Amino acid sequence: MSELIEILSRSLKSGYSVKIDGLGVFEATSRGACRFHAETRPQVFVAYAVEDLAQIRRLARSLRAGGCVPWLDKEKLIPGQNWPRAIERAIQTSDAFLACFSPRSVVKRGQFQSELRYALDCARRLPIEQIFVIPVRLEPCDVPRPIAEQTQYVDLFPDWNRGVKRILRAIPDRPRFNLRPTSAIKSGTRSNSRRSIREIPAELSPRAYRRRGS
Image (cartoon, rainbow, N blue to C red; front, side, top):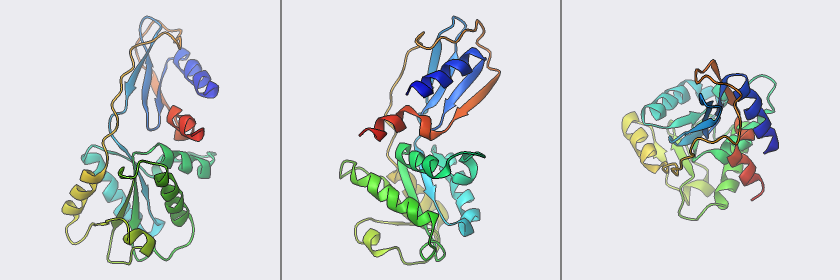
């Protein structure tokens, strides 16, 4: 947490607004305090096989239109980032996990299977009635038996829009919370103009630190 506070302090003093992935935006006020704008849209981690990327990008657009923030590795990972750790933190801090099955992803070894196993482990620590892993079929295929026997899946065929609506209904609302302007992190600036936004990845978010110790 001290690392996060140090990054916030330096960035705000330099005139940046700071966006923390999955949490919200910190910005400096004209009085040298800090104001926080919480991200109220649910963050949705999208797991997929790279061969299905075209359909996944379409799904991401549909999720954004439905008021969600999709997390795609192709969009979120930055050069030099520890990507296995970043993906685990993104799964931990997401409100839902979409496991996108296709004839390619169900038989392919590698990252998709790893993300799915990790998400199932995360789901086991949640209240039993809380929805987290949402299986989605992009095309006709067999959903792995351990998942199909316990979890209802959604088909995006033959009616894409109907499938998206079912997904959106299943995604839990993000808990609402508000933080008042605070001087705990001094901005060192007298201007409320934002030069730019600096993004902090999910592995540095307070939610990730909190869950790491749970």
